[in-house]
Image 1 (cartoon, rainbow, N blue to C red):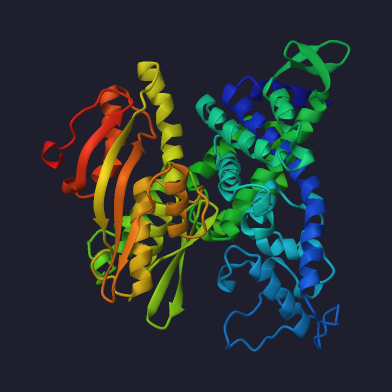
Image 2 (cartoon, rainbow, N blue to C red):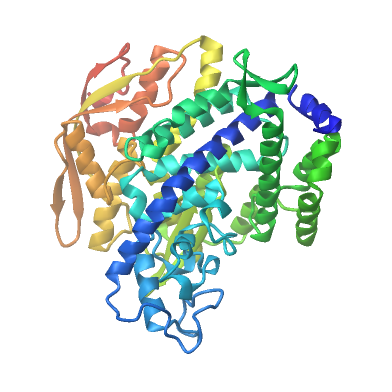
Length: 557
């Protein structure tokens, strides 16, 4: 091993933030290896299942030329057509996609004529951009595996989608870090998310049953050199062969190459969260200080500089882009008549605060207008209403996403706020308030279609109860009913007519402070905020709290 490698290693691994960053990437790599072994077999199972659904005698592409265009047509005006067999495969692939809108699927990842014979060509349809040239399990990164399992319905039986999305977010934060460092607080959050995914998969997948042991082993590496007959890494005071200096350096180099490729892909895809010029300078400064890495990563760095130059060094921030868009937007629907586009802004702010990928908005044309769609936190949400303009449709989609992600947002807030509260007070208080409700919940003004009225009312209850994507149920109504069953609460009573739809809530319902507070009084107030969103006059009486009870609104009791 070159002496410059040793000097570079010693210099970098004196920094605690960098060591934590490397530990996190090593654990993600360990997770990726296990996922690869699992997916190598399970994609075969999935491919065979799709093949069994196609009732055609042809087993290979039957087009006059092989169906090999870069993007499957999604509009009638496109003259390109798939052959009968490939079109049947396309239909089955879409039926298993959680986002069945063809416009939102990355068809350019794949080659249609290979679908009947190559399982990974099918799997790539469910993956993010940038996987077109990949042919075998070792070619894909962990992001591809996580997105495959998130987007494909076949994998719902193994793990909940929000667990996959949370680990995807961890990976993106690690890859996007311009200073190559992770704080101790973030590390604990990241490990919790990765461990939760590993444990959940371990219940059904043998490959993950010892994953937590591997995690602990990597967490205990201190990266200190031990000079003896051979250079080794210390692990809880004892040397182990598994992580010698050379293997660590090789893994570090692979991680760096993956990171450079990820950053380059952000520019290629014209993503709004690509590096700013200041962040790019931080990466350059890091390489300047580590000559051993700088030399080995020269091709990757040159590519990153080249793609960044193509887009220009002056990149507007997300806030500036959104602000410029909103200045020229006119909203006419009553529900979205405020000058401030609050739902979209709120979702963008949440994404930035929690370090999610930026939300991607689109819309679908319908006979009465537009239905908005947004991709955020690894999931896709459709607006509940058809709107007159695209801007209004985006607002409706953002509103839907905020409601569905309520539980995820609460968990993010808890993760962000708990550390600060614990440092300040040493511990936090949590409270619950139980109220006896007798209240009618009605749809918003301007919602006239019967189906939309029902959806709007149940959306309100989903938001009120703090339900979201992590809760079971394919519809808002199903989520509410399952929530009531779980808490042994009387389900709402539907009252409908030709011109109205009302839900009647009766009985005792408990509301919780999910974030934790610095005092008992604050905890009670936090817990009381959810039911207080109903009309104050609806409440009959406060029954109990798990901390000191405070009066909320004397006139209501």
